[in-house]
Image 1 (tube, helix red, strand yellow):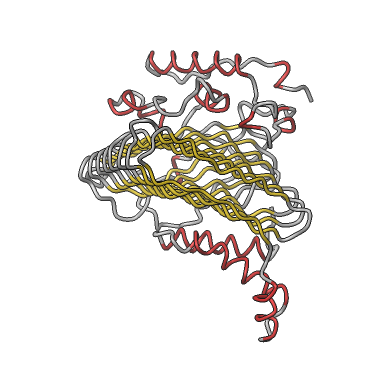
Image 2 (image 1 turned 180 degrees about the vertical axis):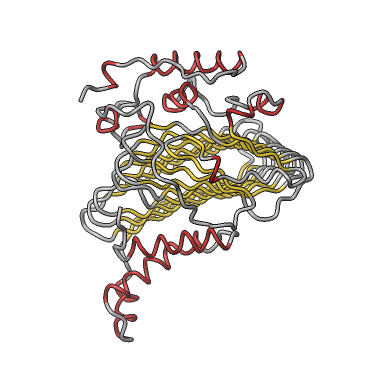
Length: 422
């Protein structure tokens, strides 16, 4: 097949009736992507990940809609939007707009709103990041979620993205939590076969807002996934970001956070569980812009067979961000001699009045613990899986939503037991 990397320039997609501002942004993003091109391993930020296999596939630009999707959560979310190959399945979605203070719309229907105009494409940087530019130029739908000031949402909102049929999709989401509001949003990515998902989510946490954002990537082992979560925090806001990756053949997760308001706090956690020839690249940036902000980052990797994982995390403390407290940790567990992990935690500090540290560990299963379990009648594979799950449970068990924690735990057990069927 011909390579889209070599032969095709991106033309911006347009939706009927979209505002002039959106059309201008799309055109700028397309122009920027064409100037930047697909990232290559010559770039420092992409030194561990090659996209050659992705760019050599002639993806469908107008894919079929696939089978009727089934939600992994049943009726437990208070609202749910389901997208197949980037297209909304309205008959399978519930918006819950009858709840006071909650506004949920497909992105293509939200473009005339004041909040959309205020926040769309203002945080995820399409000038510097090619795949963000590609999404900004080509997105066709996604979820717009707005929580009114002072509104505390009970339960969680679920966004489900399903891919198949050699399709390329570019979902775009915008989550705006007003002053003093509370909200939990869960994004799930599933699918079958070979397809490409390039997702961008912008999260805006207003003054004093409390936002929990979960991303669960459990896609086909032949799938390509590139996802960017861009979080903007204002004064005294509190954000918890949790990213779980156990699927996908080639995955790149970018989580970028800007703490721009004094007293903001962030908890960022990630878990990647890989086997076979899976390749998952986790790239994080936490930018402390304002003073008196706290961040705590913990990423864990579990790798077996010929899998390769990357953690590239950077914490930036700006000159005015005095009294910053930040801790960054990456821990990795290798289950085979052929699995590879690259760990690169880093600090970039521009003032002296801070408390910051970072660390990284790479190890194998504790042989004494394994012997202890075997001596009590537990089979070798079960003992191994218990120890691996115990390593992962620090992150899984801290998920506040019971349904999400149970779903992730079940999927994780299936992966550890080689129960995957994708």
